[in-house]
Length: 284
Image 1 (cartoon, rainbow, N blue to C red):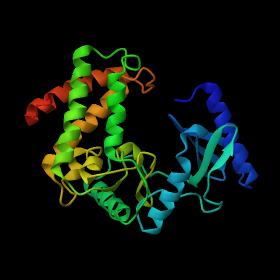
Image 2: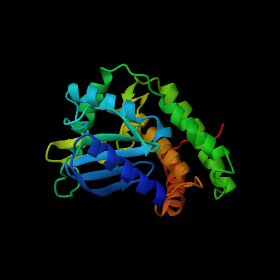
Image 3: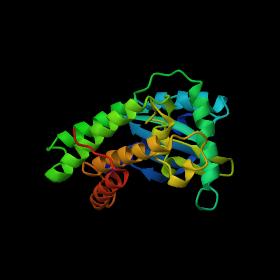
């Protein structure tokens, strides 16, 4: 979550850029506030995404979304009324996207979710873009676990559990030798829009390469039942690995997710239960 002063400057930067592009802006509604700000600008009805210029991922997101849309993938796209590019103002990167009116909130049907994700993966297989490997993201989690300064609230036994789980399951997945491709990286329900245009994926800053099971591990369990050709054993391991990763983020002293520490404690218990259920030994 941005600090109030930074958020105010971010809103001002987005309004300024949109106005300079002859888009009418009388109001800015905050839709999402995390490491970046998502704003609905009215009455032009544009979605502005504002991130600190240090992030340096906005250009990649815009270009990838365009290429995926051209391939018929279910993705949100930049607003067609302006040039699809990154604008810089007051230390922020601003991108302008199509605003999609959400349909009545409801659970996303697993079959529809799986179909949309399969179509996204099909388009991604055709692209050759430089992205990190999923193990790079695992390494980031391992570094966080190893730093007592960054995770001061993590008990020794829990720190050992996360370290062993991240290290061993990363190795197990690599030894499976599964086919790898470009992935969304975090296609969880928070990154799926339910719109009148169908399901659309957003937020591609986490793109990486790896097996499709790594992506499926972020989706509700029922989704994998409708996705063809899934290696169920690999998926089970990926689910525990992803759970270990998101648990690690919750113990970061800078984590601002509401109830994050409580979730982190609950997820540690789930990791122990899952390892026991799968008979996985993370030692060694």
